[in-house]
Length: 574
Image 1: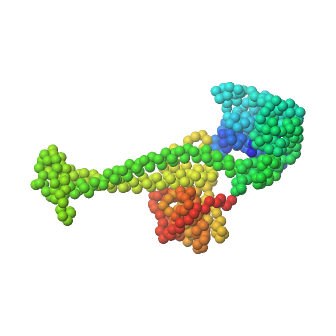
Image 2 (image 1 turned 135 degrees about the vertical axis):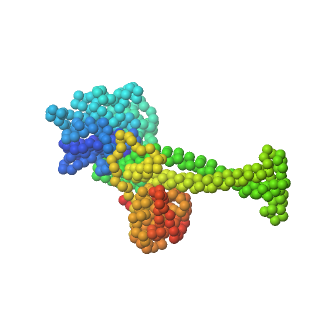
Image 3 (image 1 turned 180 degrees about the vertical axis):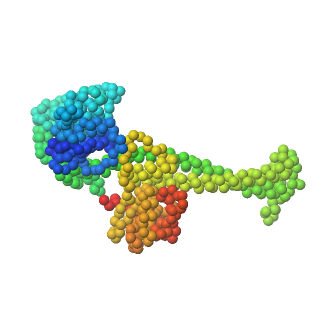
């Protein structure tokens, strides 16, 4: 959704009608750049989300529940102190720009009437949430801006709030055709660019829509149009749009959400639209998944780097261990030369560099050249070969053990990397991090922004064509719980010899078609999910065991059968 001045004006009108007069019951700050006000209005609690996130700054009512830090940030505590219990006096747009001003009436420490303002600036990477007192001085803000960050305007506690620099454009809500024509007459270029340059509150998408309505093309050029007629159309549409609000989420051919619009975009009429009663409901539906995915991506970046670094370390370590194992291949050669030399000590003399000895281990007893240390006696040379043999044998045993241990650790971390890609909720990311902390891969989180205890995450749920429920784990804790709470006669599935999810078909005795369908899910949620065919093992849950001391998610199993299937990529049930 383009959070431009035009769209913000429509949202401000919607929020003003829904919240003015309501009492502020709660203030939370789940993210550094995000505040949620719970407002008691018309007998119900409504949550107003105000986000200054760079790529999706916005304001709308929401029903999404978010987890909050154990210790509230300073801005949140100040707002709680001043405005909880106060009433929303007004919500308005400032100067037809991307600025929303929420005025709150409350009682100060002495019980006298007072007013505070929460000013929301939705300006891309410069977006901010600024809490201002009755005298216009800044109490605090989501982002503090000093003179090193901006030479134009500082945003710091104690300073007087100043509006962003004026852009000198025409206000979209009062522009006339004549004023628009006068502003554009001396300009040359694409009509949508001229609109964005002369009218406030115009995103590229909105300017293109107005150009399409005025000239029949988003790419219309000023040289090819009747500019005066187009200016009249633009002015008429800007006056008419507030009376024709039609919130919708635009979908692509696969039904995936592309964008959200507050009014009809005729230039995008070819796209399927999912209608909503209010802009807030449309925005909440659109951002629910996108916002969570972006937050998860941000919060998982450090874990991803840690896993990648450790995986690369183990791959290098494994290569060295395999090289050491190859170096132990001369073990039998050392033993043979030591034994032959011991049996033929009379043929060697101290000071010789080598001796040819009959190899009685071969049928025709060919001569074998044995290199000698001329400073040692024949017996000492034989002992030297036996020591080399013992050293090589020990190295082979140790290398084999190390390779097994390193391979198991590498397999575990690759599984965690696969689990990380499946995280869609904070609780899943939290569980994965806790497990990595337990085994020393990630340092414990000791920051002040620790989050409140999250409820346990849940596995994905799918419904097979047969109607059977299929559950798919998304991390090791889920996998263990899913597997060992299943009934003994239920079918358990897992991609063969690779990291992946544990899969359970709920209820025993599924038909072959359901097993094959569940196997395709197991393939999709495994390391081989991008392959065309993946081998998947399945067996009854009773044959799946967890070795003592094994890491979460690790099991052994017997009585399995294997299917080669194509991964099935579908969304889980809601």
